Amino acid sequence: MEGLRFRSITFMLVIAFLVWSSSLEMCNARRGKHWRHSRETSASLLKKKTKRHGSSHHNHHGGSKSPTAPSHKTPSLPPSPEPVEATPPLPPQKGYKGGRSATFNVLDFGAKGDGSTDDTKAFEDAWAAACKVEASMMIVPAEYAFLVGPISFSGPYCQANILFQLDGTIVAPTENEAWGKGLLQWLEFTKLRGITIQGQGTIDGRGSVWWEDYPFDDPIDDETRFLIPLNSSVERNPPMPVRNELSAKMPSIKPTALRFYGSFNVTVTGITIQNSPQCHLKFDNCMGVLVHDMSISSPGDSPNTDGIHLQNSKDVLIHSSSLACGDDCVSIQTGCSNVYIHNVNCGPGHGISIGSLGRDNTKACVSNITIRDVNIHNTMTGVRIKTWQGGSGSVQGVMFSNIQVSEVQFPIIIDQFYCDKSTCKNQSSAVALSGITYERIRGTYTVKPVHFACSDSLPCIDVTLTAIQLKPVQEQYHLYNPFCWQTFGLLSTPTVPPIDCLQIGKPSKNRIQSDHDSC
Image: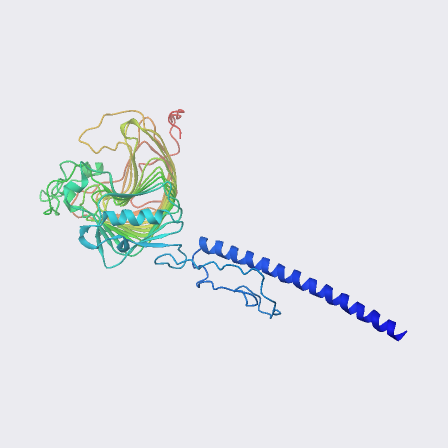
């Protein structure tokens, strides 16, 4: 009886051993399968995000731990019957920095950076490489000056979120041969998504070579007609103090220094743009624009050198920047909406302007513009809206708030008879202006505090004035009282000086806009 029981126990132990052995093989096979899959997945991720985890992968066989193994100790298992071929580590992209998939330094593409060698080709090649990699970085290093001719950093087939890191200086050529018959822009970024230009570097247009023909072939700002000198020693259009000694006559078409066209989510920060031949920074047909903590610098008498020019662009934020130039610090043109400008220093220059709009009988549409917490000093105008006779469309929903002006010739202007030529044709149609608010505009003026000249056929309506305090400082021009023509709205508080010419309420026969005029 006891022998039979012993044989039964022995038989059961054999069965249990066989079951355990089978389970061990299955477990080992499963582990090999998952390990192989894990390595393939890691290699795929490595190809997508080079050096994301900061170290190369090593070969792992049999019972050694994988880099992602849990901290607890696992039993030692026999090696897989089919060893997995190790995937070699991918080399890091050249110049990798945290958060950027790849970097491309213009020096690595042959740029000299000595300020005299033409580095245009090196910039083109560096951009061509950066363009292919999402979230890449193109580097213009500090302590170098790169001579670069007209160039287009263009999409639309470039990857998104490219960073143009500008810490050195980019200088424009001053030989007329580099510009052909004339170009509208020098450095252009087109049809890009998520493009950023940042750094502590400088874009130098060396514009004095272009300015020497002023004032013979450039338009003159219309407001200069009100400047009547106190004595004959003040010239109406004083000669430019800057004269070119570098080369022959430049083309009559002057380029913008830096232009963005047809791009989404554009950021410009940190850099300086100086001495542009014409406009310094332009955004055309862009959506989602951010400009902050940057500076623009050119002489106050440099002709037509707008600071920032906006056209057909929406959702724009400009703040914490210093803008000094020879024309409008910021110019807001047709097709712009949802523009917010704050904490900006403007001057010298021609202030912050909406327009000019409606030139050559064109339609203009501008809406939802806010300009607040701005210092404007030593400029021709402060905050201005200017339109041509004969235009159509509308400007509506504009707020000028908390503007400090210092020795500004014309702090507040609406001019619907704008003309930058000697004579302009009288026309009845006009761009309609409504919903314009001025609040807390304070400081000093040197010619006229307020000038409202609105259309006879389409008066300005809903113009609101609150807490306006402007005091005269007589310097070299005759002083004027506030002026209003066909301007209707509301005086919310007393003003200094009194602006009694504003007509309270609405016009009795205000023209209703046609479908052709509406935006």
